[in-house]
Length: 115
Length: 112
View 1 (cartoon, helix red, strand yellow):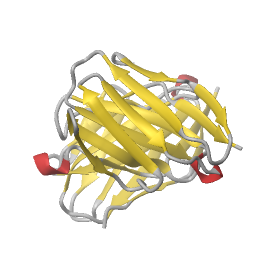
View 2: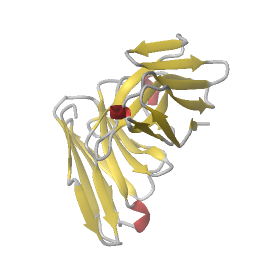
View 3: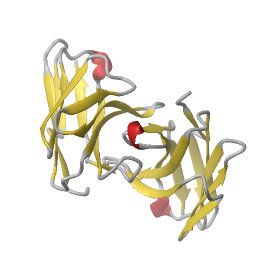
């Protein structure tokens, strides 16, 4: 199975709040899990990524939590700001050079942060 | 956008016509990818390339072909455009498999 399922489809948060987006995958061979951020009219840009040898990775206000046994990973945005309003995509790719780095994306979450 | 340009940025065409989209990179990255983005589907891989003249199919390759004759250029061709191919198309590049993919600005294609 190559699917990556993402929830929720949309999320509204107040400024200063915590935004949480969840993803679940089926294929246990996935070994690279990036999150991309996309603003309207722009291409997606890498926000943060994790590999399954760690359970958490933090970069500034953005944290990925990874649960290998549950095959789930999530993005937490602390102290959410109006400038964080964007669409967020989780993704996963297989291990090894023969995967050619192909990414399988979740369906996306539209985050709106109200001032 | 990490030295990636896509052309055209917008195109309106009619059903049955051939369309070619171009992705050009100045980063000398080995891997290049074409995705389409549709509401509710995220981004789906159409074709990818792992070197000059080395290409393969992705998840949604029917009705599309690609060519890569130079490291810097990756062309996506819709052989006979259909309304179901109305979408936003993104090109991405990566230095190596399993590393960060950098995306271009996208091409919005409308097939009438």
